Amino acid sequence: MRDTGAAEQTGSVLSVQKAIRILNAFTAGLPEWGARELGLRLGMPRSVVQRLLQTLAQGGLLEQDQATQKYRVGLRAFEIGRLYVGGSRFQREGLHILREMAAATTYTCYLGILDGHDAVALAVEYGPNPVRIVGAAGDRFPAHASAFGKAILSTLPDEQVLAMLGPGPLRQLTAGSAFEPGAVLSALASARRAGYAVSAEETYPGVTSIGAPVYGPGGRAAAALSVSLSSYELQPGMLERLGQSVTGFAAELARRAPEGP
Image (cartoon, rainbow, N blue to C red; front, side, top):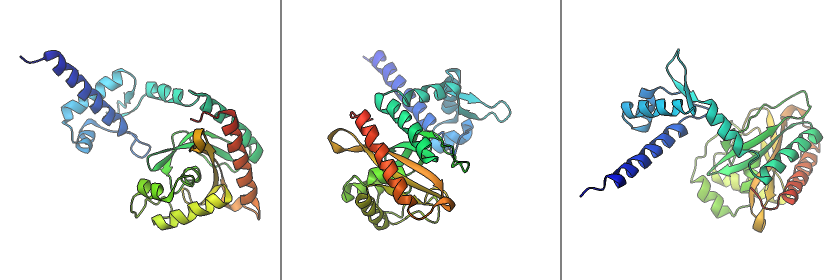
């Protein structure tokens, strides 16, 4: 005899999994989707995609542009996402530290973590410097190219870094981004010696960033701070001074929130 309850439960779980796949398709590079193109992208029937898109829109997680009929991330998804930052003591203290660091350095400051082989900004704070490097929470970069990503990678054994990054060639955002794993390992060795990592125009042309790991329980770094400025503003000794400053703020965040993220 067929267990209809179990079948319905399985069907519900599959629907949720499909809805998650749909939500994950919305990225900074691909912020809008129509049902047909999204179905082709995900290999799902258009009718199923359309039904799930409408359901997600009804719940506020997506919204539809009436002119193009395409869907984009909705207000409720934004509200839920904001709960992540500031949802723990570490994140709350991280926001305080970012404000202090931005005021002290005058530049744009980031708090970031690793997500697979990417580095994701949890929060961004702007300093008073008139030349502003614009960033936003949720910005995602290849970990090997960003300063806060490199800072975290520098705390890991080389074999673990290679396993995370893969054999290469690695993704490049600019002509300055390393695309060979060997070059990344060399940069991480330099970061270990200095105590901070440098991204010299590897995420954006004309932008230099300096990042330092934030250590948590067991001496493991699961987050990092970084500061970004125009490369044209660099003066002799500035990298070292900013590196020491960011390292100091990272140590202070670890002191204030020793439990880590």
